[in-house]
Length: 620
Image (cartoon, rainbow, N blue to C red; front, side, top):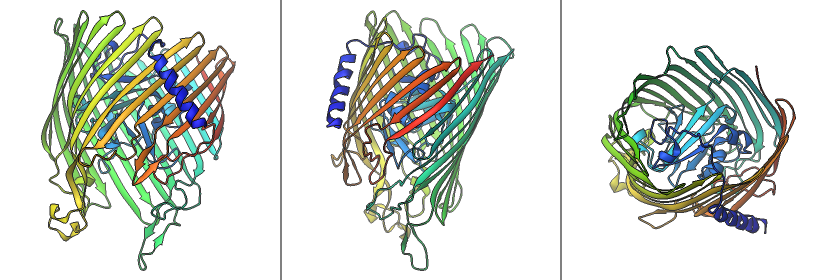
């Protein structure tokens, strides 16, 4: 009964919000939609900005949870917080999404998807989510979209922040940071720690008999720093550093000699280490001409297992240079060159593997009166899959003050993962990239204190890499007697998003509805773990020293491995009290109605969880 009523309220308020809703910050500037800073109203692309105030006020327990509540993406997770998760942007699976941290691509090249689990929310300044085609700007894998995380940077003066909280399931969170600007220097640094005892990741009687009744917790430790120097007006040299270590337990089984009998009793763990380092420069070279350059290095190091440990390590090195020229009437012309090297070491591969990719990007962004335009093209040349050209074209038209119509179309691709290419007995080195074609149209309305949006999209993806069971399509090597990877599937991803906000004095309402058709075009079956609809509804009241908030998320039923996962409705509540200058007491109640959450087949989410914490924010 609770599930039914909450979902109906969410839908009703969301549709109402299309008529009258509150505005986003007028001074918002985004980067991810064009590679250059731009006001959202000049974009043809669909970009969601999650700012620092929203992150602080959110009751989300992870980056993945934050994204699905604020950006309308769907989330799949193998257990509770701290466990392996993936996001579906417009129905595209996790490997068809690019994750950037301060412009640096991160993730596993062997698994072929980014990991959201090693990033602490306390160190994030803001998040930009490009929903829709992004390969013509960022290359491989941006079929569903791009998520860019920006860590904290130094600000005027000196400020400190610290927070500590305890919660149910033996959970603890603690963080501390400092931000400062002194003369030509700016600096920010932060540390964070999280842990939870959790629950068993699997439910009893799972399909593979891996259930172990012990509690599967996690621990996450991370550090982040940014240092900037302005040698001359209009120029900045910056250094970005981030390191995190995640240790999470899970349920599984081993089949070891001499009996090869199933054993689900070992202490199975995922140990993930993420490292990011980047040196960049940006400066004004002449009137209307801005240059930038960067060198970046990232590491994704994963060790997983019980008695036997599988080790997968990805290192990414990239150098890039870019020029942005304001041509005047035609708009801003952006040109960029990149070269990247991805290397992988694995206990499963016979030898280390490497991919080298060079790319050239050309983009044009401009506006004249009520019309704005956006066009970009990119050429990637890879040592693995050869050359791929992708492009995107879009524009917007102001129908009347505050009402804007936009449209965008683009081509995309995903590179085969190293597992797809080289995993013994499965990978095939001749696989082709997956290819996508996407189109969308949107209507956006903004007035004094009001905003609403609707977007309808269509995406077709072909040459999807999937398991081929027919031996005749696989290499002659006997290792492939049980099948192989093959470009075999096609996907249909259609849907729409409706969103809005409404302010009534100190009270703000927000809502979003997402409808999705995600099917295998060959079989007509709905794609695993994609619900046909998801609704979110939130309300926040800020009364000076006191603030109260609540959010409802309704996720529809979805298939997963031959099982239909039931629809879920979860309610989260939060409250805060600023009892002294800079000091606040914060509480939250997650999954307040104690719903039984199954985030993936046979996996178990947390029940009701209460939190109590303190926060300090102050400066000199």
